[in-house]
Amino acid sequence: MSDPTLLVLSSLADGHKHGYGIMEDIERFAQIRLGPGTLYGAITRLEQRGWIRRVSSTDRRQPYALTGAGRDYLNEQLEQLERVVKTGLKRLKHA
Image (cartoon, rainbow, N blue to C red; front, side, top):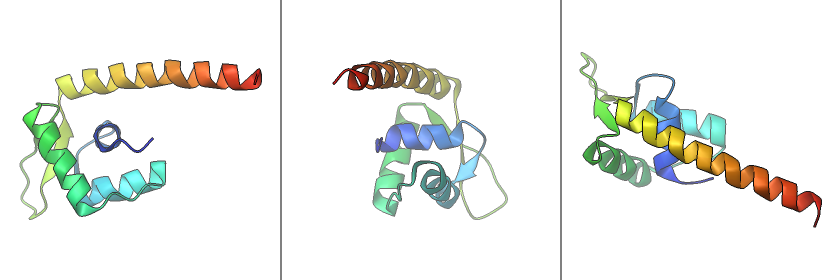
């Protein structure tokens, strides 16, 4: 899975993170390194859709948080992905 939207939302599902923190977290759990353009492009789109929001900080780095709508969207997408994975694995056993 390499969809930046789902990767960023998944990263933020366990708490606030700034851009570099998101990038490092994604690399840890998905073994995918998003470039800055891809990451910040995804962050911009997610903010525009209301799925993440900026969190105030005294640090120069800008943290982001998952919104309720973002949590709902992520849950829906992961449930759909889970159905696809289960079906694919089941069918692969019979291939």
